[in-house]
Image 1 (tube, rainbow, N blue to C red):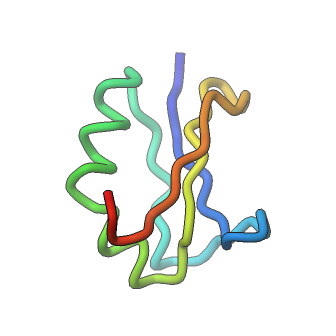
Image 2 (cartoon, one colour):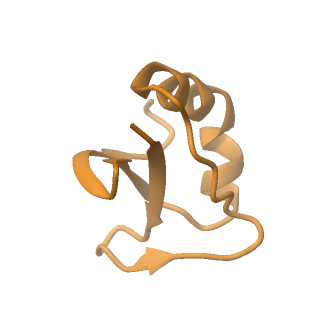
Length: 68
């Protein structure tokens, strides 16, 4: 299984770019731990929410506002 994050604006517009990594993770825990360390940088790069994907299927969406 490959886990990844999709980066979006608050309205659901999908973002991409060199400031937004395209990293694959071997487990959900690895993906979530990585996000815990990098969410502020992602937010500064324009992402307002993230979607956790498993093999391309959305598992959940989370806001990247400062209340995390």
